[in-house]
Length: 395
Image (cartoon, rainbow, N blue to C red; front, side):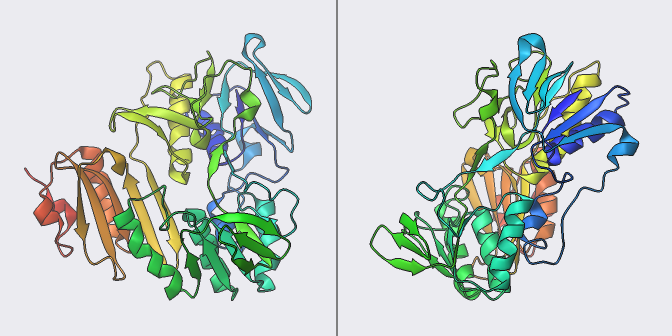
């Protein structure tokens, strides 16, 4: 068994193979030289110097898992059942692709000093002294990672300006009416949010917007999204989607025999939502490997169709999301979105399909179970924030 990718999805695949009783050789390739590590702490504890790293608590030696770290995989030749790596060809019987996603760079910033991404441990370590020295920081992109970095930078005492080309934060993640109240969070935390602000160019020490505005910037952090890290699969015959995602089936098998894909690099068909999902979140990288291992080793095939889940800590708020709201035909608010805690529920034919909870973890926990169960709901009862969601079901 060979796993390409030493992030959450890759490591959990190796662990799951052992938990399912596989006794043969398991090799995990990672392009980075570091011991495999978790990514969420990078934008929080590691960035602020509260932790030196976030290595997984996995004893690879005891598990009998070989790590090939600092070794980039360059290509795949399925006909030969071989990988091309920096260290030469490597044979496999079964291959799992778990290479995750890579950040999208801002065009024209290559080689410009002071421009940063935040995806790897090395990125976080390069940014740590920027926060310590309290530089003026411009964050490009008001998505999840931009908000989390801005939160850490304000906690460190930096002056922070976030520029977003759209008219609101989280434009690609949430509907306008839901994301709009979150704009006030930036000002509450002492950060400036500039919407309708498109970057024209980045110069040493400044970001120049399309309208000519110059923003002083001791450092620039780019958070404009990520794409599946699948360029190395060119010419392999592995079918890819429009975003570069590996097109896995409901069992997380690829279009090539004996090759599976899991985590941020792969999309999968969801019968629950009636469309193919590409989920770039930690929980997907944790859950998918169990299905992969079961399908590699089991006599019957398991279907992967989870309720997507993620969380974000930003500006003193704990934000959680479960489901997929694009499938909804109705929306119900629970609480005042200008207040400290509230939720939004999305329904399809009066069945809960997604939920966003701000400071209401009980809503999230109950809502996630209701989505999984496909329970019919009473929208009017749901709108009462003092009433538990589980009590708004229709028998």
